[in-house]
Amino acid sequence: MNWKQTFCLAFGACLYLFSARVMAEEITFVTDFGINGRHAYFFVADKKGFYQEQGLTVDIVRGQGSSDAIKKVANNNAQLGFADAGSLVLARGNDRVPVKMVAVVYARPPHAIYALEGSGIEKPADLEGRKVADSAYSAIPALFGAYAEAAGIDQDAVSWVVADGGALPSLLSTGRADAIGQFVVGEPLLEKAVAPGKLVRLAYEDAGLSYYGNGLIASESLIDQDPELIQRFVTATLKGMAYAFAHPEEAGEILHGYHRQVDADIGAGETRMVKDLARQPGGLPMGVIDPAMMEKTVRVVSSAFDLKHPVDAKDLYVPGFVAE
Image (cartoon, rainbow, N blue to C red; front, side, top):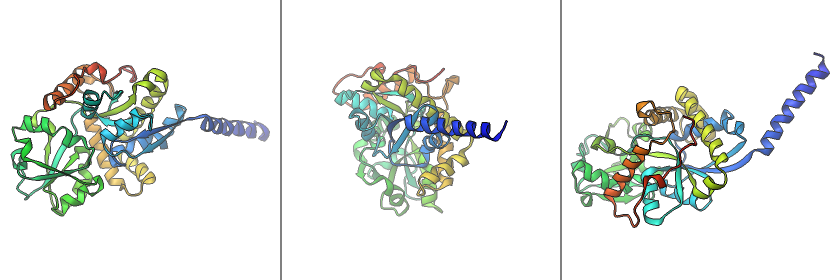
């Protein structure tokens, strides 16, 4: 091959890549809350070109809680989002919000309340008479009624205080809050914040609750009008998850490259926690929504809240976006 042929091939390849980037469809994706280590795989999918392979340019923006993400998707401020299934039940049951889950990520409950060792909080009953801080749109206080019932404590005896999500680790480490709400995937960050202190974890799952946590969501209008776009996004995201789970240290470094405020070691630690939550029972492929688990989710939430409208599990998700 002479130099002219080599040049033409190289130029053609560059032109193809440039054209693909120009023609890529731009979409907005909103997280459940902020940008944290638990979100590393979205940035892995971007950095490794998995979204680009699917003809997508994805703008990943910060959410202010699952309820906020659901509202943004419903109002078309974002095409897709990441939100808690319990909050999805509440949105559907109270406001008939037309948003559905298209792939599950946290196949087990991620919700927990954290306190410090020596604070007098060692078991659920110790929360009575205490103040627990969390952000305004967090799913943890939203589902606290179900946890309180399962744990056999009086939910009205626990006070919830609204705080900025970024301030929660500091509130806990300095003792300005008796406890805080936090997904278990955030434990590596909390451990670093309270060191040399030790954490006490009161996980909702440990009280016997079984239901879905977070998943990828889309509006019913987008599901009807452009299911192929959703398919492409889900495919690329799951590829990013698989890569991040196999290379958590690299995932942490990639996230740190995008968002310097998230330490690489925290990104790696939280990615490992996500891998544990994403593991499906019974060999079900990662991301596939199990109808029985979605029904459990509806039962848990419905038992803890007086919903304005009955919710059918089939109204909360759409199958088929994950290859089985």
